Amino acid sequence: MCGVAGLVQWDGRSMAADDAHDVVERMTTALAHRGPDGAGVVQAPSVTGGPLALLGHRRLAIIDLSERGAQPMVSPRRRVALSYNGEIYNYRALRRELERSGRTFESDSDTEVLLQGYEVWGPAVVDRLRGMFAFAIWDGDEEQLVVARDHFGIKPLYVYERPERILVSSEVRALLASSLVPRHLDTGTLDAFLEYQTVPSPQTLIAGVRMLPAGHVGIAKPGRPIETRRYWDLLANRETSAASLPPDEARVELGRRLRESVALHLTSDVPVGAFLSGGIDSSAIVALVREAGIVPRTFTVSFPGTSFDEGPNALAIAQSLGAEHTEIPIALARVPEQIAAAVAALDHPSGDAVNSFLVSHAVRAAGLRVALSGVGGDELFGGYPYFRHLARLARAAGTWGRSPRAVKRLVGRTVALAGRGSPTARKAAALLETDGSVVAGARILRQMFSPAERRDLLGDTDSSFDADAELNSLRHAEQIDGLDLMSLVSYVDATTYMHDVLLRDTDQMSMHSALEVRVPLLDHRVAEFVIGLSDAQKGA
Image 1: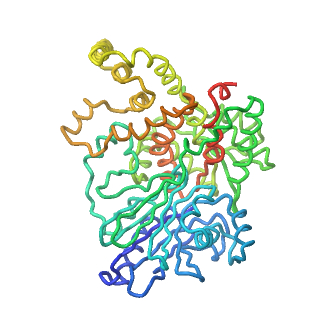
Image 2 (image 1 turned 30 degrees about the vertical axis):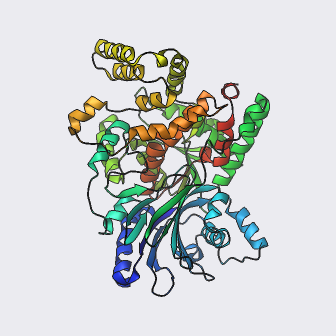
Image 3 (image 1 turned 90 degrees about the vertical axis):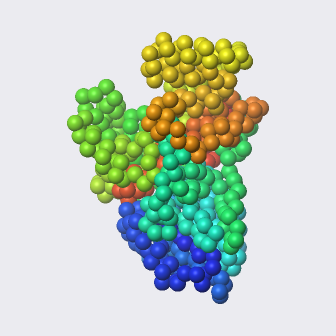
């Protein structure tokens, strides 16, 4: 787990190599919290007179702690260099495959497997990876920059493009530290931030800075904007055969995949801990760690004396599993102070960070560099009350959704007035005015500020976030034959709220403390199976 930085100046003669080195050095310094175990900047090899390419890296050593695993890593065989953030959990299997083809290795790192995998398979290497990753590869033979993010977008990668150059980094703050990215707020995305408590990918709050979308690989060449392709999608890659399995067989297969995923996520040359909330998702992960023969070290944030204190449940689970448990009690009087610290740690703002900030700090203070988290459980298995609300909406859509627009508007405004402007009445009114689709309903249920409230805060600012385009990009899921309601809602949630809030905050808050957080429930082989199950199987 690390921090990635890179600069490609397409006309290498327009910037001195020393100046370019200083740019990337500033970027890696801004990422120091992500990788306290090492730092490096290399001028990547290229054709003489071609582009000037530099890659930088900050290292948090997890696999192969020796210098042989240090980055940026440059190939001795070709003009190829790599800066990479994440973990490839199937790297040992890929290494064996490469060795059978005659490849030899100098390190025991997954980084070298990724580098040599690129040399053999090119950008299609992403189709073979199982893990969480964001990387930048400079291919000097092809004079191209190749960037990619993992299937769910667990690891971030930000891009800033101009005709003369491209910069990439794990965090927006590093791009700003380059001094080549103007510090201009994109006021048009503020509207989206207030609506969703985040700026939906690929946009950001900084003008010109974009995120590489999850499940995409991109190639940048001189004189052309970066070209991306989606290599994986949760629905397109779902296992449709799963729906035909009897409930008992489905449970056995799901259990097998979860055990396999947890075992892979325990791959590490340093000890691995676990977040434990006492809920089903994190408790299941800890139970599977124990089943694998490892005594888990578990950590819980608690709020003693409150109705939302998870401490007692987490303690009971930890004791039943024989875990070595640590509780982090937080007094309510200290919450404002903790919020201020969490906000200061944010890179690209979003709205669900404090718990992750606190537990990450405690786990790192306990001497651990890696922890498992249950993120993804609610989204894939329907844990939110939100799923039930959308189910009721879907049942009503057949009749109410086809009602005349004027009727829906009248009833919606009546409900809003009767509720005296409460958030619940506002959302109910907005739902009544939709076409009854799950996608439209999901957007409203996740809404933080209403359109009127946002206008009060921002005035008549034009939004650069195209909400209709986002809805249309998700509506295709509602037309897929055989896709049950829970899988549809899971897809919508996983590609919006989970990606843009939960995973973004998990990365930011954990990496602020130089802690790697792994999410076994979001192994794509697990998710492909779960999304293919029917609602009846999930309720069995």
